[in-house]
Structures are given as C-alpha cells and as structure tokens.
Length: 308
Image (cartoon, rainbow, N blue to C red; front, side):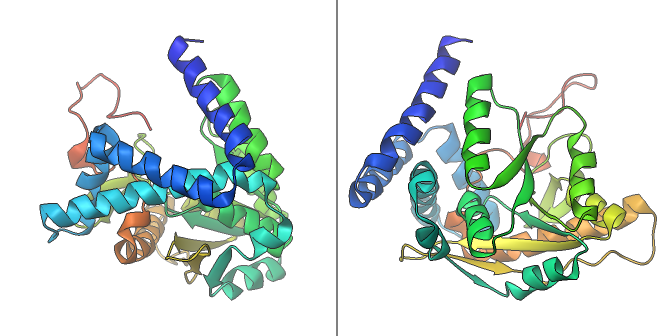
C-alpha cells in the first residue's frame, strides 16, 4: 500500500468515525466549508465539474457556471457528510429523509414478483435513497461496487453499504452479472448507478447534445430476466429532506436484436437521467470526464480513455 493509499484510507476512516459524532449543525457547516475551500482552489475536479455543467446548461455565462460549480461542490459535500453520518441515523430519521414521487412504479413492480432494476445517475445521495428503500419499504436489494485501492478502502465501502441493508457485489471478476440476474429472477430488487461507462462494453448514447457511454447492464438484465427497468432521479432543495422521482418503466422493444434493443433502452435511460440533471444540475456529482469528445487521445493499441 502506497503512502497516498494509506492517507486516503485514513481520511475516509476518520470521516466515518468522527463526522457522525458531530452535532448536525457543525457537520453541515464543516461540509460547506470544505466545499467552498475546494471550489476556491479550482482543482481538476472542480474544473471538470464546471466543464460538464457547461454541456448541461450551454447558454450559461462564466459567472453562472462558477455559481453552479460552487453549488455543485456544496451538494457533493452534503452527500459525503450525510453518508458519514447515515450509519448512526435511526430508522425513523431515514424514513423521513426522502420524499419521492411516483414510487408506485417501484412498489407495483415488486408486488408483481418479476424483479425490479433501479438505475440512477450520480445525483444527490443515492446511498440515502438505498437506505430509504431498505427501511421504509423493508426491501433489501443488491448492488455493485467498483474495487477501490487500497483494498481496505473498498472493504470500508462494502461494510458501510451492507450496514444499510444492501448486498454488495464487486464490479470486477465477471460474476456480478450472473448474481444480479439470479436475484431478479427470484423477484428481487437491483439498484445500479448507471450514468458513466468508459469501457469498451459501454453503450454510446446522445447526452446533452454529444456522445457519451453508459453501461449496458441495466438493459441487458431487463431483457434476460423480464425485470422492470425504472430510472430514478434525485435532488436536494433547501430543506433537510432529499427529493426524488421514479420515472415510468423503460420497455423492452419488440423489434431488433439484443444489441439494438440494448441501445434503444440505454438511450431511454439517458434521456430520463438528462431530464433530472437538467432540472437540478448542481446536484449532479460528475467530477470526471464523461463525453467521448472530452477523453484524452489514445493510441490505437493503448488503453481506452480515462479509467473510471
């Protein structure tokens, strides 16, 4: 483990161990202070966030983009402050922390017993939404997590999410898809963050006027298992309660081969995500490259673009 990896692991451990012990107003102020300091430094993440917002709000002035990126960093740090404190929240606190529209799409799908896939972008706090599902709906679910370095940091994230009632599978290793499919065939719930995939298997979509890649997994799982595929978008307002919306199901097209159907369904997901992001751009925590036009040039036999 490198010195940088040890430091990263220690900082996350400090967050989960310390932030949850702070009085809530102190934690809120701390998150906002860290966000403002990071924003003023104008590091790579902030500049990338601003560049991404420029695609979402193409007519925004430089001043407006700066306002958005500052609000975006505050939203991002709100996510982290909430996440560090979430394991200490009571069930009643979790239940009261999300107000979601059209949840009947989800509950009706679960009642039908055919399995449900929820696909979300990096909007607001998807971990809080997951905790709400396991408490308010009393429904456990399965998700995947990217293997992080060091391994101890990955283990922290897995333990954190398992503590919220989630089954967490490693993204790498090749077995996650089969396990997800089995859970869905058993009538279970699968939740996937699905707005970025720079791998060769990513599906090209039109997203805010340019081409990006998003994962094929949600559409493929829906086709193979008959599960309902539901986009969900989340956002913050000025209250402590997060807001959300369950969008109408993404239907499997009747015509076309598997690849063609996957392309159509993934584009429909992207369109639903774009609706939520356009309404609340400051809550989209995309501090990385996303659009293909923004990726670094690569040699023909080299690695593809930027690692997620």
